[in-house]
Image 1: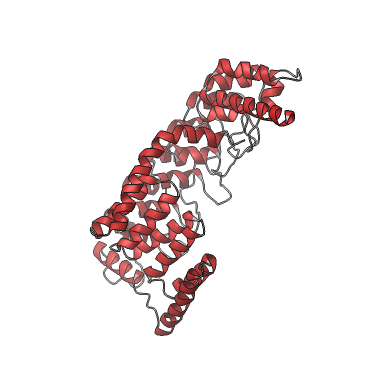
Image 2: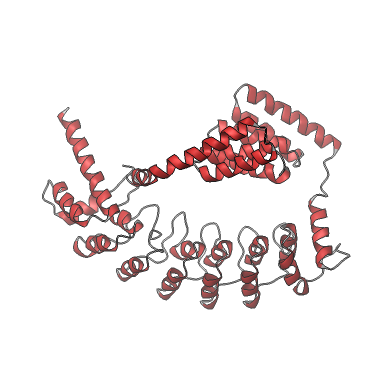
Length: 405
């Protein structure tokens, strides 16, 4: 019993130490370091040894919250290393330039990579122009690639940040890099960001490059009905076989017609219905993963059946996988944007992900389609209330997550 009590007391001190770093309470941090030094090893040794379950030290928590004075104390006075191994690398710093300067001056690895990519990829993808410039000044590589082939330029194009894009191009970033079979121009054409597209064209991006589906950027713009982008790219794009009316309207009409041209044969339709029936049976047995497999077969045979996607979204929810449920719900809504149940499926997935504001929006859009639907109206009210309640708990939840010992 005494050992358990001592262990709980030590754990409490460790948690308080990391929380002091997180909140920037430097005085408490110093006192707790001394209190933890029961073996007389010194505050520096204690600070280096105290880590949470994800191997994060006090420096990680202080840096993530922008506590520059705490970071300076931990590095300069306690000698904590600036490159301790955890899941985040240096990515906690790009929004705080002074903190970045401190870490860079202490020799932090500028090309360290985590699940979010390198610091430059992260900063570019979050439209942090000053951070991008600072990292480049410290020899960050403008064309570095993550394991998924994402570069800083691709990241900033996806974010729609023209200022970051201009800085990266000036530093030598390749505008024709590919990831997932698409070029930056494909990504920009899909989003419809004219300023980003003009910048890419000026930098020498190829307007005639095709993605893995054989589509040029102008076709991607047409699929997204980005008329202004189609107008901009039209004189720069070589004629596409099959497009008899080489005009803005002609390209949009041709591209959209090709998208819906795919027909489902009677035999495929029959097999899809059989697979759907197997999925329904599995769902009634509460064998949700078996149902997912059957619905996947049905969807492959008949990709136009929104009901199958709706059912599979529900199965993913019951199986505790809301991210996949959300993917299917969004695909369902894309097929049938006027279907209230598709809105409900999306809202349910977002609610389980605790993205309450987005969930409320999805439910509300469903209510607009079916004003008499009480289930949707109730879900909307509950999501709004949950969103209000979650705001009051946000600070405590963030601390609990970071101090997940």
